[in-house]
Amino acid sequence: MRSLLSAIVSVIACATSLHAQTPARQTESDAWTRYELLAPGSAKFRIVYEVTASTAGAMYYFNPIRKGSVATDESVFDRATGKPLVFDVVGAEVARTGGVRSNDTSQTYIRVKLAHAVPADGGEGRVLILKTYEDATSYFSRGDTIVFTRPLGIKRNAVVLPKGYELVSSSFPSQVLQEADGRVGISFWNDTPSEAAVTIRAIPNRALGPKTSSIAKRLEDRAHQNREIVYYLQQPETHAFDLYHDYTETKVGTSTYVNIVRAGSTVSNPRAMNLDTGEPIPHETLKGAAIAKAGVTVPDVTPQTEAVVFRFAPIAAGTSLRLRMYETYTDSVRYTVIGDELVWDRSFGRPTNAVVLPAGWTLTNSAAPAVVSTLPDGRVRLDFINPRTDEITALVTARRR
Image (cartoon, rainbow, N blue to C red; front, top):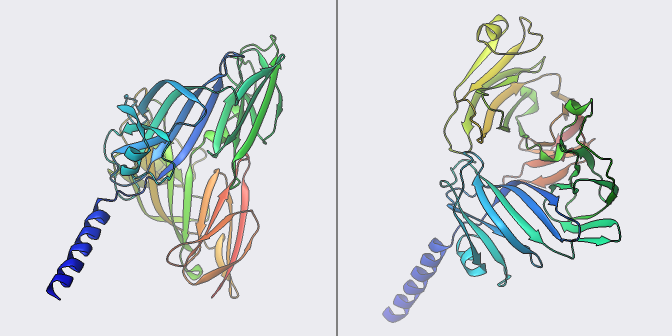
């Protein structure tokens, strides 16, 4: 009996040890890819890949090298500081020890050593990967026509034609945005759960020169925007909801972010953190004349105008800052209860928005399309993706369970 007990204890200890050594699963977010098509006939395209490592404590990020493509000219940078990062190419076994969950033993990866461990509590490690792929099955010529055809799993993408080429067709709904140097870009946000089956065709047009559009300031690449906001609804009788808002600042010299409170809403409990470092960001809440006195630029200030100002070190050239801002809002007009029905009636201007219903409520209506999921604690979450440049009206109702 003593031997049996010893064996059981040994097995349990071994299993516990193996479990302790199992790394956390690699997670990521905010992926965006730009494909710059190089000379026709070369089968080559330059890839600009932005991605965020989000596994708390991770020191490495693993980026799979697509099979069938030959990768060259790789370089990797930390998006927060602009400084280069150390990387190498490893196999599947090494990637698994770093948290990658894949059964493909033949897959290879770019292993990136992050500038620092990913901070806890939602912190991030933002990475920029540059590389050139050669892939004749994805990029080829048919006479004068060049063809780029590739299933894309990343949701936000842009394809840029070679200089002097005009777009003939694009199989996926896209923005068409001409670059400053005259090249034509095709940008899209895939808001479906499947890969985007993208086929783009273009032909020579030597008349295409540098962009001189008079409406250039009105054009913005929607797919490259990465503002995100999540609303956590409190019980509707309170008309209150907590939220956090993620935003990346890249403009050189900028040292503040100003959140103007919507008319009819009140704000409380503001705070912010630098997602790149996990450090808190100071803030102040200003109203009316105090806004101008503080040197903050806000249009059409009235005595009732309220703004939350977050302050940070000025952005230096080649760097950026990822902020997360937390606030609690009260809005009896846009969030209320009518009879026994919860009503959320609010418009969204950002491309990525989510609403989490309060505990004990079941979804009955959503006027705008949303991906619906249930959190581990039973609350219902709705994720709205708006690839268009206009606002969407998110009219949501729910009833108590």
